[in-house]
Image 1 (tube, rainbow, N blue to C red):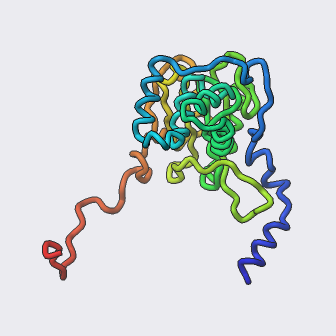
Image 2: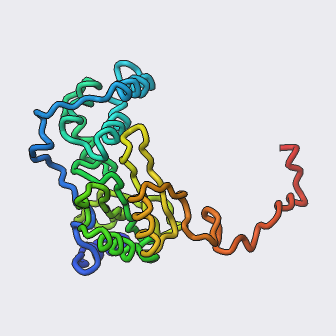
Image 3: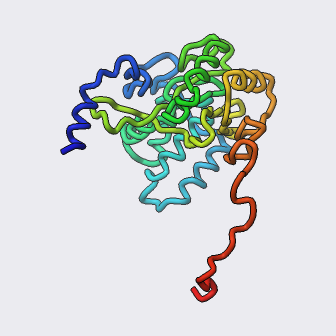
Length: 265
């Protein structure tokens, strides 16, 4: 009873002012033909990636090729500079021998697939609760201001784009969310850099954690220069996800329990 009343009350709260629908999902689930994205444009995997396609399909029974749709779409996206044109989806559908709509369903469901152009360095800013509390909005604002673009726009040189990842709102059935946390809540705030600058051969997907507005601008400029920076925490006082300044507990091996013979188990 209490849970139902709580859910009803949450649905009555207006979303304006703290969350808007455009922050939940900005990529439409439909397709409109354009000169650079239409089914008449030829598309196929490179010779090197055709070998990867064979390797991917080898993991599935021959009568379940469709099980390889997700890794094949991922490979196609890497090859095509970080986004999936409809002709690439059609090529995948032909390979796994399913109607194209079955591939469209996957590509429109998972937010990992980009169906519009992104930069060679696609920057994902986590906007879920831990990162938001730790300043993710300032991180995104710093990136957008420095690059001179809006969210999901590509810089004129084609190098950068910025996307925000948000939380799932299961308590608000009137809203539809299409992305999750990036999974480094302990090192919030954080961004991910999907590097498509070298195609599928050199593709990387790295996390940069404990970032500040100043640090993300430095990361952008290092990427612009082609410099490789170490992923992980950007706080020099932390080691991985350990506490700042080092451990204050668990400094040695724990003592065994005094009243139990573990070797007899």
